[in-house]
Length: 476
Image (tube, rainbow, N blue to C red):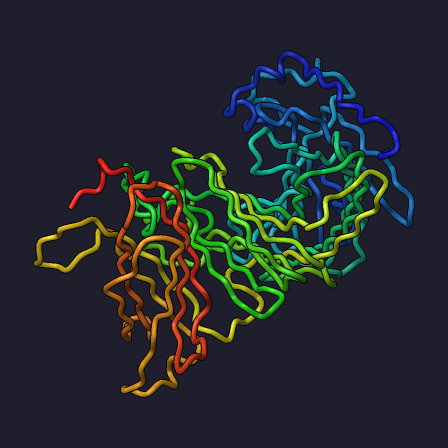
């Protein structure tokens, strides 16, 4: 495929499907008695999504058994159209599907994973709550031009063995820049693990290849209240990027909803893991009893083998609405892929409440920010305060007279009013400091912080980008 020119899909949906609104599209229901593997005595069933609304590219589906693939043909009898206003008998027999969802024998009502649309897929943890999504591949994400979204054009669903918690899915990917083949071995438990192997074949040189891209949403939270017009105190699918570097350093980067596109690059060699995480699990911090942001799963990416030199990249886009995903994180290799290469990547995706890899250090519990200065004293200049709470690690071993030091660096500006003190409510420590702006620039300022004892790091490293306000908004 990669040796031939890319052929874009020629998709023209029939008028009744093309004009569907959200409610009409959602009203089309798959008939459960048509589920793949129903009655076969296995622990999985697959049910299919209907095209419509924004999902307009059909995906070919195949059943695989004993090494043989059989295409699954669309049949209007698979769907109940009674509440949608669509006459299924008038739809073409080659309409196709929008994807599929997987159900496990412990619950034939709520699915555990979904591959819907041509590029995205997602899964749940034991709480059965969907949140962020993954993509097969990202191309030129975060560059000053439209990015390319490679499509899964076909999926092959292999019949699982009886009494097995594992099911294997194969995906065929295609785009103007690359073709690829994927294998997903999905193991269902309280933490769902997807063991992924990808073989990629570029059609041309690719400036920025994104491996294992995760896509999430961050509208607002305690550290970023740029959008502050909602009754709920926080709205996000993920609250931070965590990375475990090849040199053993742990990083935590709180997410923000920027006023302009932010692209962060964390250069590394042979990363041990990274992921968009939802650390804050307190319902009271969200107060959302409809979509339950406190139950959204995190996704940890664990490379299999060495990925060599490259970088974890974080792209943050401005958004004013929680229905738009505005966060992307992925690995990009240092060497740009070239036409004619074969690129092999293996990794595991953990859909989890908490990171499956234990960090021995104390971790960031919360990040808060607001006006700096000394309470009760008149301010003579503008500064911005950061309060970072850490919990876990070896704090319980510290004596009362232990001198814990905050190690803070800034790419610009002046650090002042620093402190580190115990925070008994979380059995942790709180670090605080003010950033005094020393120029009129609104360019981003990079910040780093960790707590240390006699030069030994007690915590992971908190990294942040602060956007100074223009002079007219520096109120004191």
